[in-house]
Length: 135
Image (cartoon, rainbow, N blue to C red):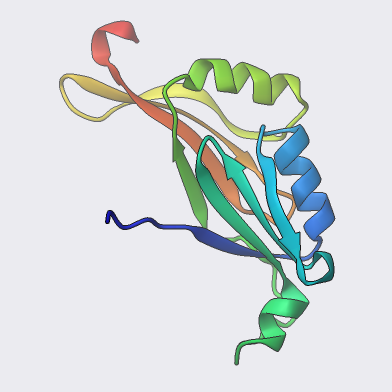
């Protein structure tokens, strides 16, 4: 069986984050539990778990205090149609923190990417590898 990495992010407002993921970025609800304090979202077969700050800290020996969430964390989603996704995300009114562009990766391939930010400050970057002659 192949390993799978599933990110869990801690957020202040599950409902607001779910709404943003669904209505701005095209995620779908997989399940919600713990009185609405835990959710699993899915985007093209990739899962993203959300847990409220309160639930997370009550089940672990960790404290965030009032520190901001999301800083220093970036979620990367490799998708085949990054330009189309960019236009849909931008049209939805999502906050675009890095407009779509290409970055040289190798002599043959570029990375085509754009980034958006969730309400708690987590960056999501949609990207794909493309042949350099295309961009």
